Length: 214
Length: 214
Image (cartoon, rainbow over all chains, first blue to last red; front, side, top):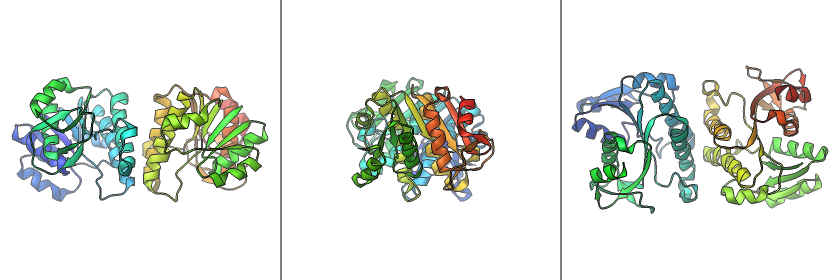
């Protein structure tokens, strides 16, 4: 499977890339800075220059021939909310439009738990949730993509556990490694198409949880 | 006509309120701070405490019995892009949802010229345009409201000219006074429902321009 990973240099993105490579997929790693490329080449992925500030038609060039696009980008905590608007919202939507322009049907996005429910947005992160919410909504209602929306709980950097609870209804933590494993499994599980899936660490092996969710 | 003006204390909002009062409408001025109320009472409008950070159900209370809602709010240049996300995007959408909850069909929003066309967003204002774009799109595609979207060019504080050019296809300036006059005329012109109208100052009397656009 040819997979384009947007935000490949991010914490979850890197893990998605390496797990896809490990299972034999052909991985294209969208990077903003050329110097980020070498590490991906060494890891067996193909780095591709990619900037979410560009227009959809430009982004679509990078998606030609892909079987799937994974959006794991985020403006991150180091930039201002201007970048939240430009990357997490408009950048995400432009990548959806680009996928459609390039005839790539499969699109998986890493969102955040409770994004769908405005009343549950944590106070200090509300502006970020606004961006994620409108990106998710666009994907669901304004595209014809075969989407899956993953909404992990609070991200932590601990070692992966391999186990999750899906749609827990309560908040919780999940390791970035487990989110990446879940995303990779989602890509090869067509039953997850059209689903929005919340996930935190729990007791169900990830492969079982993805299959059950499908 | 009972009209609720969101952002009544803003530069365009104030003018919309006074023009509506002048033509005999019953005007409810949404304000965030109680001390803003007296000036509206003196001007013949009824101040109503209103905060776009609240949930749609709370906002809907203020809309009960209204014939129309006008969204003239903006986070303004003094606040950060966090408020652009919270007010210009999510606040606007929540007010749409509130209008529907309160069974107010008519909804007029003051947007900005070229909001619909991402390629024309001015560089320095792109994050702001992201917010306005997704608010406008929500109004058009996710509500059943009788909407009109006004997209004025660059706003200036000169005296009103009474004349505009509609959908000019090029950029240009328009006085806030003329935008307010146009918005007020739009409210009493049902033919404008479902329209997105760009406007800059020009040669056509506003009443004629609004009628022609309908």
